[in-house]
Length: 258
Ligand code: MF3
Ligand code: CO
Image (cartoon, rainbow, N blue to C red; front, side, top):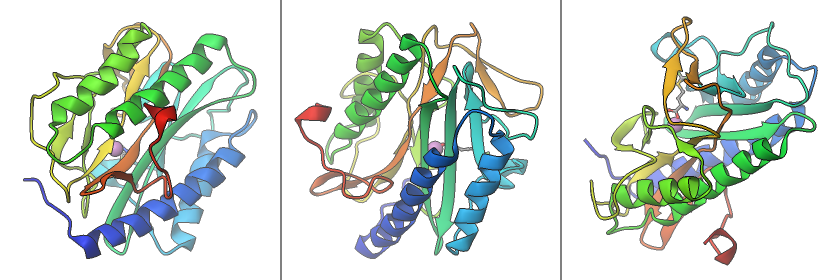
């Protein structure tokens, strides 16, 4: 069931989104070589709680931490650990969600650790471009397939792979609501988008193929071919004035993101 959000509810989602944006900016500053992923998780949880919000990932279906920290060929859901030390040359995807006053925000980014290869930098850049192409299509009257088609077109025009087994999702009072938001699809197909819908768009893009495998920890997802993967996610509201990215307050679409 798709739940539409009214103006008051959207305001609460904006507040959650703004808080998550602020925390993600601070997280970017603490991510560096020598740091453990557990330390980054602890920092995130502390920031969330100090702002009277709740970490949405913690205990979600038994997930043990407040962020996901996925390195290189890990796609998503890497579990932060004291034994994972960040090393120059890697790329790290950080995914985090919170609940403020009962309303959710969900966001992810990928960053290089120190100097990384040109192809990894290009992967990060293209994954972000995939998100913005998808978000641009999140307008009233369009369909879910328009978002997926836009994401897939950008990725594949750069020879990159689009992970299919995981998708974006509706979001609101719950982290995962209908509809599912695939990163591939056919323009004009699927659920019709309406003002009041709020969705997380989250391309997971690889330097290789789209196939993924789950690790024995029951969480970590890796690329099947060992290729590096990047992830970029924001919470997006479909409004009468076009898409609004709640986890990127103040952002406006312009030609640079066409
Ligand atoms: N942020 C992820 C998503 O976009 C969910 C993380 S799964 C969890 O759907 F178990 F870590 F919470
Ligand atoms: Co999400």
